[in-house]
Image 1 (cartoon, each protein chain N blue to C red):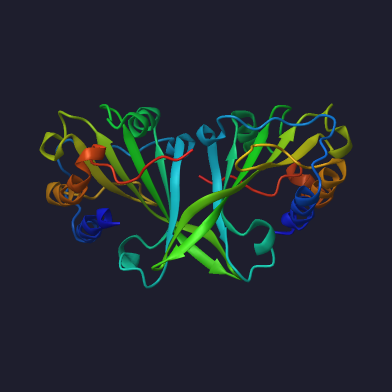
Image 2 (image 1 turned 30 degrees about the vertical axis):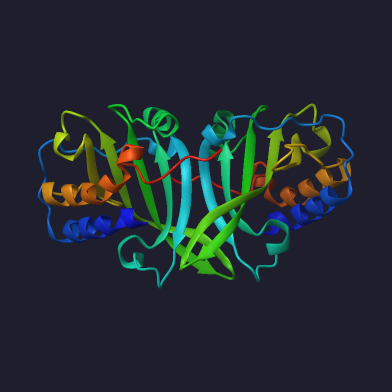
Length: 158
Length: 158
């Protein structure tokens, strides 16, 4: 959960800055057909609700899926945090509107400053990214706590 | 939601009968790498909580994924309803232990009586199925309401 602390900062930046950065990332086309890693619902009252509240699903492309298994993510690994409004009605929680598509992608050369991980938050409608270099560094500052897992918080299950 | 009414009946049967039926289905190996269709959480107080309460994910193999898009599910289409306990703690809902793996699979010949759809509920630990012919017919009695969607309740989103 501490991994989201800097995601809050990142989303805050996203709202106030449209500056693109060098090594900018493209929208992860086709990620809905990638492997599904896990899902979670953050409800009102959760400390991260304002930033990433709702239902999210984590998807991984084939290289990232290998990374979850081996513990090392090769260049080209992409992990998507697909965030939706959580519609809580009649004791059922369903997916509402997509809120954002948050991505981390491995490229040792392009993202050298952050141990080879690039971070981006894409607008759900325009599919445009918005993180500047500082926001990306903020993401990684927290992910650094997961160095023994190659900087990735989530884990795959059977 | 009405699609689960007979799933309740089916799960009830599963608890009391170990009778295998002709055309029996095998456990859907590798379904965690299939396409993720959607997810939902059924909470305490939901009328279906006793039967299928918790967090579920729906997965579709490539043929079934085509079926969602075309509206017609070809033989070999398999759809999995992967059911977990929902751990609701500190305003976050996470996946707990797997409760069951519920499957519908298309085979016009094997499952002729139910418009070509076979149904099965696999135990999460033993991976053994438990539905008899009556329970399968009960499943389909409710799915029949979705005839215009080729008997499938769920729908794919972008």
